[in-house]
Length: 566
Image 1 (cartoon, rainbow, N blue to C red):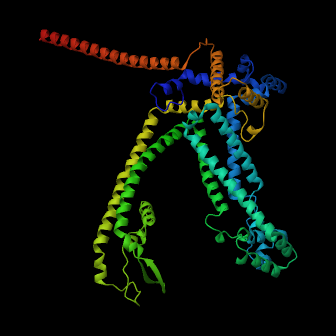
Image 2 (cartoon, one colour; image 1 turned 30 degrees about the vertical axis):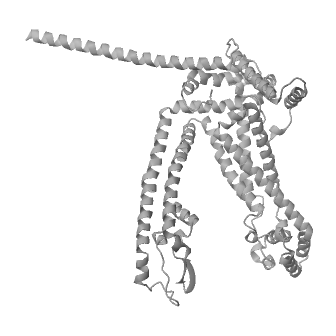
Image 3 (cartoon, rainbow, N blue to C red; image 1 turned 180 degrees about the vertical axis):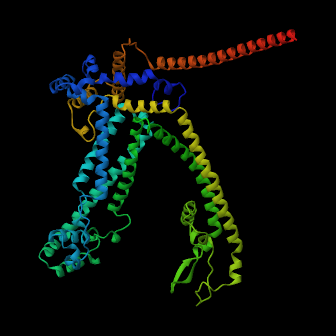
């Protein structure tokens, strides 16, 4: 029920009410298997003796403590924080040396006197030969374990909640995209490590180069590196080149870094899912989520306007953008495009997009004219050539100006108005929206399973072995239809068990209900709510009419008395 995005049936109001919030706050203790009467005394734990605290913890049990929603929230949040720290360490390369020695002549440089000879040799090898750089460090291996734990966590979440329920949360799309990019990044990184090791074994270059540097044979070292990088050894020597300026654009290590960078951005942005736990940050997170929808709708209209002007301006400047003319620049003869901002569709798109941020000058859209042979000075002018493009430049300037008016003045202000309206709507029901989002966050930690945080969730537990045994037993057992029957039975058992726990905690009598019964009750409740609202409106109208009638009678009485007195 908490997955309903709109408040059609009053879900948000009900779950943000005092009763439900009190139940989530106080009744959540049922996940810790200890005596409820002991709870009032927990406030005095600080004053109790150490033996009493240990006795209380023994009665609760370690498993019950770990299954407690508060404990799960703290451990999972700490795990996410550690993962972000590892990403920061891997990004800033804190464990690696910042010294860069690129040639043997720099080994005796005074600024590197504080370094030992081995540190200088290692720095020179990293800048010269690619195999000397370590791709898979200890920090990278820790990140791999964390990613494996996150993948296992997402698989269990899909298995427990179902694919349809999993796809209704946009945070799950973020998790899926992040894990996909991380997996692809490390697959490329391991592939690069394999190719680099293979090339190093072919030349035996790193060991030979290191031995020459250690013994001070710098001349033979330079000859060895030149031999390894000789084009006749291509393509075996490609993965021996350490300079990234010599790599191909689609090098696997470069692609790995690109995917890793994008995934890091989304991983840090993923931390916003914790904001509903705080009263100040919760409404801001909800507003941000709603504004993303506004931005998505705005991008549809913006893309249409951008594409329209891109096609028009490209059709106007296509000839001049493809022509190159020679001009004198700082005493040198250079070739430039006649229309720099409109060299093609991609250049036109970039010019229109970045012009919104003031990165395109008005001089870039003017057409430059060629000079006679032998004349390259910009002071030379020809009236005939300048008038030949006057209509094109005039229309182009008007279109460029209209584009800025439409995009910057109209569309941008419309987006601001849309986001302001969304923010005001959230602030109107700020308390209800925040409590509803906080309840959804709590339920993620109140569900059974995923007790241990990442990456400790990959450690097998007795419960996991029992689940695997039950699964194998049902699959192997004859007279079973398929895996779908087991999935249906498992979900029904999970929901029934969860319902039994709630009813037992609230001291309610549990009746067998079906999906149709639940929907019937929800519709009935919605109709009752409409009828109650109608009765309230009618009662307000009746009170208003009664007050009006009484006021009129009183006024008439006063008028009669006044006339009688006169």
